[in-house]
Image 1 (cartoon, helix red, strand yellow):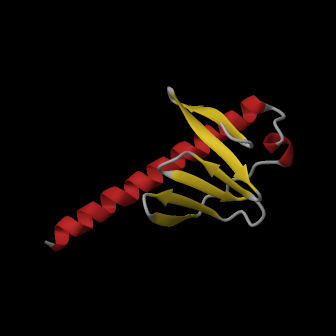
Image 2 (cartoon, rainbow, N blue to C red; image 1 turned 90 degrees about the vertical axis):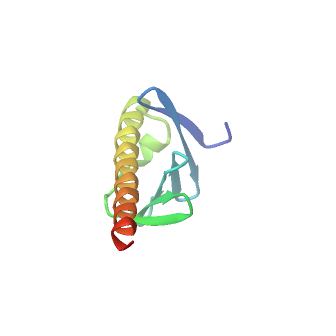
Length: 101
């Protein structure tokens, strides 16, 4: 695992989280991208970048490793929600594509 990376549990699998500057990258595909300064958030699903309108707020002390269990719980919740949003968008787009045919 590289510098700035930690693993958090999501169900029975581990989810990677890494920080690069003011951005936090959670998961792999889909991936939740949190812009820490502006609080803008995105879900990267495949080649798409989807604007995610949920606020993800993580205090500097959590990101510094204090209260690791609180950070892990928060990231699990945020990531699970982002995965559900990405899946919902995928299903809706497939439905629309079939409807057009």
